[in-house]
Length: 80
Image (tube, rainbow, N blue to C red):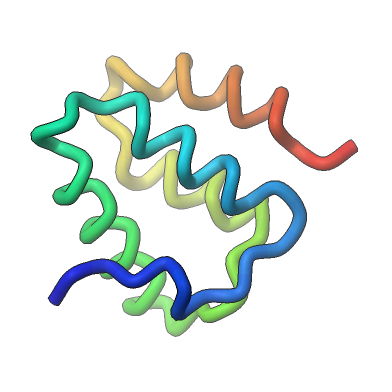
C-alpha cells in the first residue's frame, strides 16, 4: 500500500522535516522510504506526527551514512 501523507496530522515543522528526509535519498529510493516511514508510524498507531516522532523515525530507519546529515538538518528545522 502506498504511503499517504495526508492520512496524518503534522505538527510544527514535522511535514517539512519529513519532506527533507525523502528529498535527500536517491530518487529511486524515495518511494521505499515513504513506505518505510508509513509502516513505522502505523505500527506505532501514530496519526499525529510531531517533530520528536520524526527524530525517533530517523534514528530507527536512516542508514548510518545519512544519520548525521539528517540529524543536523532536522535540528535546524525544529520549531524554535
